[in-house]
Length: 191
Image (cartoon, rainbow, N blue to C red; front, top):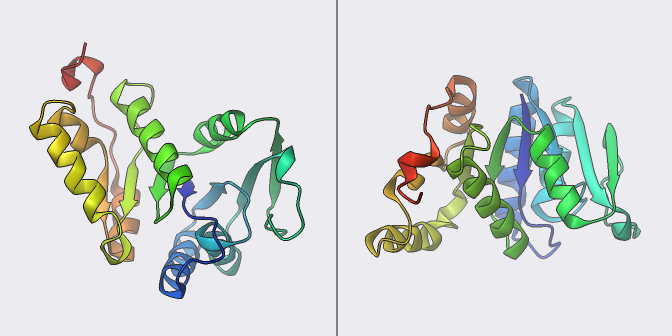
């Protein structure tokens, strides 16, 4: 399965996150999974790629032409797809991915998560979405989503469209055992 990992690209990311995501990448690769991601060399993006390289996994990096700056891109991608825009980049990653794992990140990662969640809510895909909640990073965001449900801005069904996992073995098991649901757009109570 090709797993799209969304996460921080910052070189300032704490080492505990780097090590955990690198371990995850290696574990996924050794289990036979491939990586599709934003082609970054730094932060958690770079950690995921290094892990996949260690584990012998296939890596597809997707990057806009304007990111062609020394030290920004991971140089061991098996395939690199160049795009004109960030939007095109996201679309290609979504199209190539068979699953999505969201590791800690910033605004770009939030954007990617909410877009694929929205697409699943609208019935545009039935791929697994996992929030890898390392060290409780996403706890506050998850609390906010529950508030959004309580205030009737988000359907409670939408919270069932992704899984929150903080254990690497549990994440791998979830991916391996995932079965798509028959959820339709009518089930989300927005249409």
